[in-house]
Amino acid sequence: MPFRNREDAATQLAERLAPYKGQHPLVLAIPRGAVPMARVIADALHGEIDVVLVRKLGAPGNPEFAVGSIDESGWAYVADYAASTGADARYLESEKQRQLDVMRKRRTQYTMARPPINPSGRIVIVVDDGLATGATMISALHALREKKPFKLIAAVPVSPPDTLRKVEKLADEVVCLEAPDHFMAVGQFYLEFPQIEDEEVVRLLSAANAPGNS
Figure 1 (cartoon, helix red, strand yellow):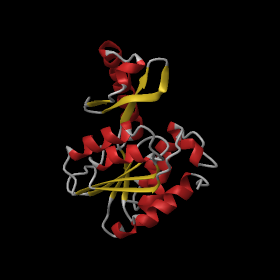
Figure 2 (cartoon, helix red, strand yellow; figure 1 turned 60 degrees about the horizontal axis):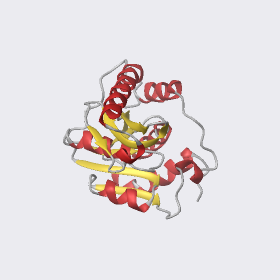
Figure 3 (cartoon, one colour; figure 1 turned 135 degrees about the horizontal axis):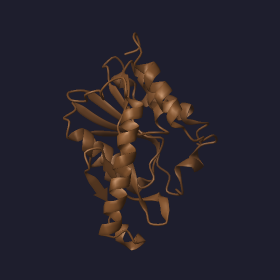
Figure 4 (cartoon, helix red, strand yellow; figure 1 turned 180 degrees about the horizontal axis):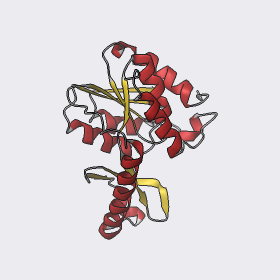
């Protein structure tokens, strides 16, 4: 601690996930920051890479603070503290629609050449570059559970202990490298934590799904 960058964190996660090497796991990234990490992990485990699209529901006036999350189907998780931030029912409905619009655009952009990979019956590893409130991971795990994977694993470099306890209820296994009590933001645990752009996501997914790479 801290991690040098996302590649360093992903390499360490891949070592912890080594028992799944050779079992052709499906490694699903929560965009955008986790996509380069999922590429490293999928390569190490000889698996496939794709994305699971979920979006945080941002608090009024503070869009980076999650008061919940939503998946592509429209199922939403709303945190118990949402109302205290001013996120009433009307606000939440508007925010849900806004984030659904973002996901529709991203789905078209990210997987224009093929449909999403079906997780049914697969060992599925859901990767994020870190958890804070855990909202997006909660929606991701809920969405994937509905599709009946053989095993559902959440893999992250860092998370607060209380968030891990929430996530553990939804996954068959949670792999987390660090769970510090003093936690302010995911970025504090990386020496390098650049923004990942949509173009990088498209490039990584296109390269991963080129002939000979699946």
